[in-house]
Image 1 (cartoon, rainbow, N blue to C red):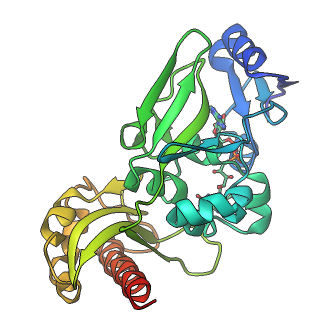
Image 2 (image 1 turned 90 degrees about the horizontal axis):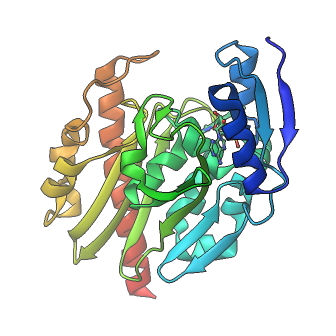
Length: 288
Ligand SMILES: Cc1cc2nc3c(=O)[nH]c(=O)nc-3n(C[C@H](O)[C@H](O)[C@H](O)COP(=O)(O)OP(=O)(O)OC[C@H]3O[C@@H](n4cnc5c(N)ncnc54)[C@H](O)[C@@H]3O)c2cc1C
């Protein structure tokens, strides 16, 4: 491993100043759960790591109108256990519980997962399904980017040199919407072969509105627009017929240990099951 410097930034201004001073040789260090393995494998060779772990307020979770604003340095486990997140956006709290294991989530951060953009990661998927926004700054200007526009491919995002992700703005779940999350992996804690996240509103047995995304199949999370359109107005027990539409927006279904056909099939099955879970939640709430 190439030697590198290490600096702990005391505030966001200092982190941005260090990024500016060191240019492309600088990298932000958050929880290090992805960055350190990349360094060990020689995939990154930074001149300096800028640790943002001590910056005040980057780990806050706040409610702002109909959204949760979650600081980029918030540990994944804190989000999973936060009562406000669990009640206002239960899809996020549930999905984040599928990331690695408790040790990883205790250290790994929301921002780190989003910027790392692993093609099978749970957090970027949920953000795309919920129409979340990311707040970025380079110290001169701030910008908001829609989650769907942020990932540009496997381990690649549209973050610019010198920028830091400071927070994510996640819409809360409206009272008449329900949610579902399903993931298929070989062992608990493994990255998903495929996963699906869903929010939906039901009228009787039918889907009145639905937002669906899948991960594990393409270069990152995919919003399934064709499936959403076909599913709207359809009865929950007829979803199997249109399952294969979930991969319409995927350019190329990844192959790994599994064939691309198998992965696509699993993504469809996970989607249907996630919608059925959302439907069951809706029925339970109507009963009580
Ligand atoms: C054993 C193991 C199992 C795992 N399983 C899963 C899994 O099932 N699902 C899953 O999604 N992930 C999994 N992960 C990855 C985990 O979620 C990481 O925590 C996450 O990918 C990176 O978060 P981090 O805070 O550790 O970021 P780091 O590793 O510190 O950083 C990751 C990248 O993001 C950049 N970065 C970090 N924060 C910012 C910021 N605020 N602004 C700009 N750039 C930033 C860094 O420069 C680096 O390039 C696993 C990791 C391990 C070690």
